[in-house]
Every structure is written in C-alpha cells, then in structure tokens.
Image (cartoon, rainbow, N blue to C red; front, side, top):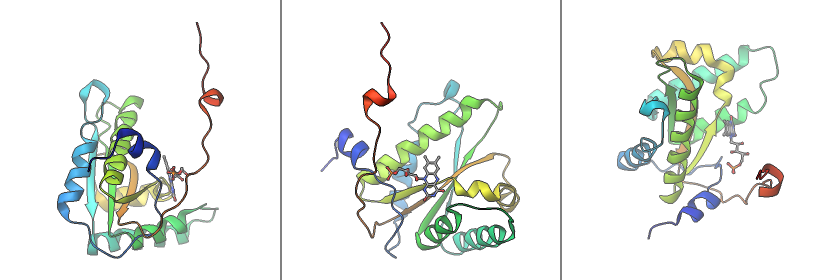
Length: 179
Ligand SMILES: Cc1cc2nc3c(=O)[nH]c(=O)nc-3n(C[C@H](O)[C@H](O)[C@H](O)COP(=O)(O)O)c2cc1C
C-alpha cells in the first residue's frame, strides 16, 4: 500500500536504534533514486552518495571515534551519533559537488536528503541525519579523498524503536502573512 504524502511527512521520525538485519541494495537504490528527484539549483544535481556497509562502514566509524577522542572541546551528541552509525547496517555519506561554490548548491543537497528520508520512511526504513560528522570534517575529507564537500551522514536501517513525535512550532509561530 502506498503511503500518503501527509503520512510520510508527519510520520517520519529520526530513528536512533536499529535492528541488525541488513538492507537489500535494491531498497538503498530506491531511496537514492527518490533523492535524485529533488529540485536543485540550475538543475545542477549537486548530490553524490557513498553507501557504506560492512568493512567500509567499520573503517569510517573507527576513524570518526578515533578523531573525536583527539578533540579537546565539547563534541555534543557526537558519541551518540557514532554509536548510531556503528549500529545501523548502512551509513550513507552525502556530498555536495560544490561545482560553483554557491550557497544554493548546499540547498539542493539538503532537498535531496529530505526526499531520501521520506522515501525510506515510506518503505518502513528508519533514518537519521547526522550533522555531527562535521566535528571531524577534515579527517572525513582526507579519508574519502573526494573532490566534493561533505554535507552529512545518514544512518539507514530497520527501526528497533518507534519514537513519538517531537514538538513542532505551529504555522502561526513560524509564519507572517503579508497582504
Ligand atoms: C542538519 C541536521 C543535522 C542533524 N544532526 C544530527 C546528529 O548529528 N545526531 C542526531 O542524533 N540527530 C541529528 N539530527 C536529527 C535531529 O535531531 C532531528 O531531526 C530533530 O530532533 C527532529 O526530530 P525528528 O527528525 O524525529 O522529527 C540532525 C538533523 C538535521 C536536519
């Protein structure tokens, strides 16, 4: 059964606990395909994806954990994010090709991520957008040696939890209508 747009948008939650089961590659391809249908600045399609499973994921999370340990300032929720990436069967690194260095290229990639998260939710998959990878930005860039800029990491897996909705500001709190 197809999920309605409202069910997808309002039902999606950041999932931080995953079952051990692997994700078929076909499902990963489906969620990335959804990402590629996002709008983008000048149709530049600035998104790129590196899908990590198994050993490549372990290498990445080992590097992340190691680098966090070397930082001498507060790294916020990073260790929690690290554990999440260790537990999830799939981590997707999202890049911005940054072809022209436009701010709007970042927006394109963010739109693609939201498509991906919604499609994943519609397939019963859990995801979490991880910005904490920016604490180790240089190390991640050095590790993957891509000509692009790191935008985010995403965890993907079968949800082991079903969290309730987080509070949201109302339309009136975030909007002004001007005549
Ligand atoms: C740009 C961005 C960065 C985020 N970084 C992290 C993160 O590093 N770790 C984490 O656990 N959640 C992260 N999140 C998830 C947010 O905490 C989550 O979306 C927010 O609390 C709302 O909850 P919901 O996604 O369940 O609606 C991030 C979300 C966004 C959009």
